Image 1: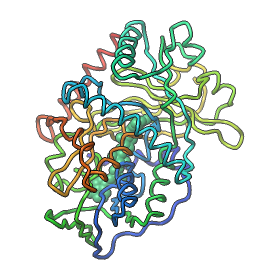
Image 2: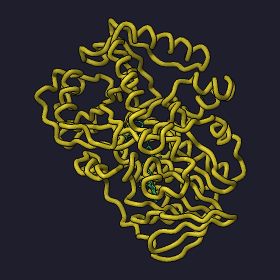
Image 3: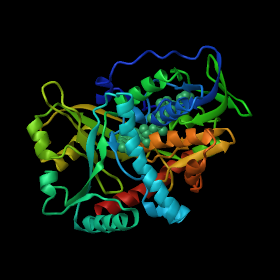
Image 4: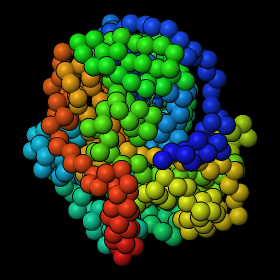
Length: 438
Ligand SMILES: Cc1cc2nc3c(=O)[nH]c(=O)nc-3n(C[C@H](O)[C@H](O)[C@H](O)COP(=O)(O)OP(=O)(O)OC[C@H]3O[C@@H](n4cnc5c(N)ncnc54)[C@H](O)[C@@H]3O)c2cc1C
């Protein structure tokens, strides 16, 4: 399914601007640890840091390299909340627990800032997030949502009325919006590499090019790679969509609950700082409120004080990369910002998000000592950090907060491996039509 996936990493702005990192070894022996974490993305590395902080010996096994997956490729947007609406969580858990979940999503934003500061991670952390609506009908919906969130969740943001929107974002596409100072953006690959360095500094043993191909469960679990094993009292599976691809037999019950959705990003040539300021005055990350959304922001400036536009959008429900991807993305960016119509695109890359049926995240255990974190549904830059913390709390005997999430019921995507994708395509076509009709 991911035959195209490697190609999607080959022209990434993040890879081209990655900070230096150590060469992590490949597992070539039999080792023991209190906890074995599968996956060197945000979720796995966050769990590793939190576990090491609590005194556990931790091994991280990564099939490729640190940040190979979604964590090294995403839009870098730090956004409050979950991928689903809060009413999905309220319906599943009731209001009090839903409020706890919402507050944890805010804690996740603080955790990113805390880690950047504590470990001095160089990842261009910038404050500010804007949600924007594309027309009057969407503005009305956005305002209803903001009213409800203010009353019920005390979510306090600055509203941007239609008359003011152009001073915030100079685009013909947007009608209104809101600014949330608790959101923001980062260079995700550098953040991920920084998390790995931080974990290493706490004694975590990290092995790359070390795919877990089999696991024997039991009081002590044994995880097998091609050239070594790890025996561990606890396991954290944090492999995103790659887990079922790399090791389909590891946790088959989890596989049916997530589907891969491709999403893509372009990076332009550096542009003048004045033009960047004219386009997004606050330098916030921006995301529209459509179901199938566009998300964009500026990168940090280069030595000549010029940032790049990092523009994400388009989705694909098969593992195939869309035809003429760069051209289509460029055209989309130019619709949003006609001022960039002649700006060159220098990078195009993409990856897969692990969506659940309800878009609520899927955290829990498959047995007493095997935990998993998946289903971030495209909303995981901040939430993965919190998820890692929750799993560490649970392993340390405090499972109350993880259990709040574990109580959310998830449904399987129907139809088995080959029919699930067409069913999803049909479902998504409906949502795209709904976006188009306003
Ligand atoms: C293009 C794109 C844009 C996005 N934009 C945003 C955004 O702006 N804001 C936001 O909040 N979210 C965004 N997301 C989602 C966010 O990036 C993810 O939710 C998050 O990075 C998931 O982290 P993770 O650690 O769960 O998974 P990953 O980062 O995918 O890490 C999983 C790792 O596990 C490894 N692995 C899997 N199986 C095995 C195995 N058997 N053995 C060893 N290793 C294994 C993989 O190689 C991979 O490196 C985006 C995602 C994509 C793809």
